Every structure is written in C-alpha cells, then in structure tokens.
Image 1 (cartoon, rainbow, N blue to C red):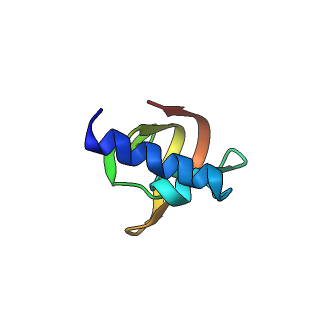
Image 2: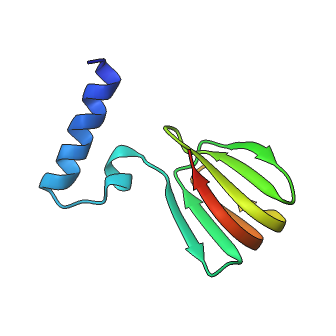
Length: 93
C-alpha cells in the first residue's frame, strides 16, 4: 500500500471516529446543486474544460462534469467556484 493511500485511509478513519464530514478532513470536493440552475463546488483543483454545454472540474481524485445549456462560470477562487445555467446533469468520474 502506497504512502498516499495509507494517508487517505487514516483521514477517512479519523473523520468517522470524530464524526466529521469526510470532505472537510480529506480535502475531498464538496458539490452543492441548487435546483437546476446553480452548482457550487468547494475544494476544487481547477477547470479542465470549459464550454456552454459542459464544464469539467478537477476534484483531485475525481473529475466533476457539469452538463447543461448556457453554462457560465460566475465566480471562482482558490477554494470554491459557482456555475450557473440550465444544469441537466453532474457526472463524477
């Protein structure tokens, strides 16, 4: 088992023992969908692809793909981002 995998396991166990959200402890992305018009994401690692119908965001271990129409990156800083438009789906890969 690699050092990184071992560290991730320890963080997940710590979150369970202290009843903490896993995203907070392990730095996992937190995605919040508000209706079909707004998506907020914390702990992102940057935009990988950007278009009006699809936006791909790095979440570290996984890629978040937002699908829809008239998608727009409304705001983004080092910690979180906001996407608006008509959101049809969110895929986690």
